[in-house]
Length: 115
Image 1 (cartoon, rainbow, N blue to C red):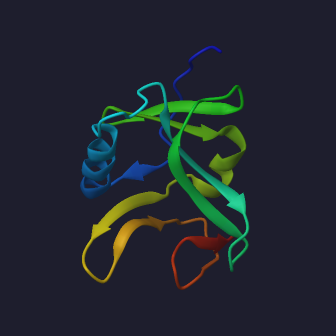
Image 2: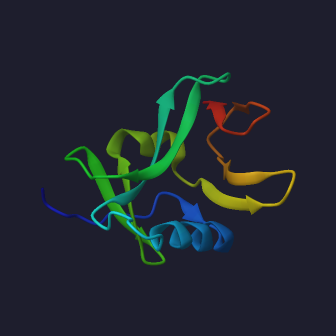
């Protein structure tokens, strides 16, 4: 597979970068994997965000955000371009959050959206 860097379709806040780096520095982390940003069908609003570590495929665009190697299926950019991913570490709200300018509606949990 040829590695071709593409424009950065999404952004990560400082909090998200810190949490992803923490996860990548855990013992036993597979350094051959990249952070996958994407979507899949489902969820209460129609589509659900995908965020996790995975191996790149021929269908992926490759990019780096502040030293974090990332991948995204080429067809997902339509839904995610311009999105900001944040990390909330509070007691009432803990986890990654997604601010997507392409979403026409979102669900209450913030992990599902429609375009």
